[in-house]
Length: 144
Length: 162
Image 1 (cartoon, rainbow over the protein chains, first blue to last red):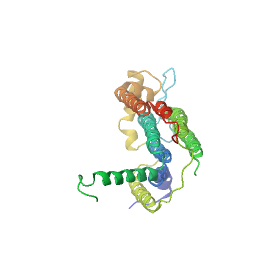
Image 2 (image 1 turned 180 degrees about the vertical axis):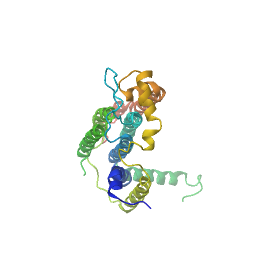
Image 3 (image 1 turned 90 degrees about the vertical axis):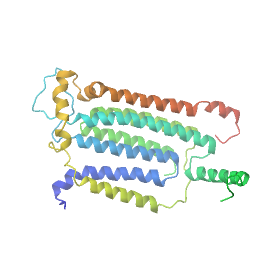
Image 4 (image 1 turned 120 degrees about the vertical axis):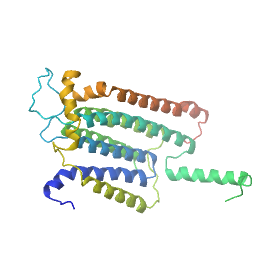
């Protein structure tokens, strides 16, 4: 069983704060009906994951992984881990690509349904299904 | 908050603050990108969407119990997962001792670029960056296909609620 000493709590509080942030994003995505708000929530979730990765690369007393310009590297200087930074740089750019695609979908949904609320879209879908069932119900096996 | 404009502005502020956090965590390149892309481009894109759709959220009557339950269960599972993690800033964590020292030691001789992040991004993992540009290109094509003819369709039915 893990002991919650002060050192343990201070060393792990970053993970816990990022989990709180991540769950805030998840809650917005699940609970809010507005599609733009859902996308903002997804962005919050994403940024929390970025923070989690970056904090794993941090070394206490270390500095940014950039060498002096004359490349005279002091062996005593500790550099933070550059690999999470590279990973997250790629993830940020991919994230904005997915965000823009999602926003384009929202614009199309608004054009077709006249609303950007999830409830409105579902109601429109249900009424379309009801009309289709009335027209083609017998062919498809009778009204449900 | 019903005003989506305020939501977007606050998310931009959040992005900027997270860029500051990245600076304190020694990730200066990530902070640059987050400030430019997260706080800049994302905010502009969402504002453009608001201009094309609507600015206010309609109040909804959905219940919050199931989403709250889902988030608490997921959060508890993630919390359980962090109990094995090394402390923040621990120099002997597995992530710091496996391959990262190799990159830090060899990139001055092999690549000769002062910024190790650039060396890894553009040289060691250049193919990944190529794949990333492919993803961005695909997304751009998707956005163009989704939005092409938007203004034409709008002009055809001026009575619509757009």
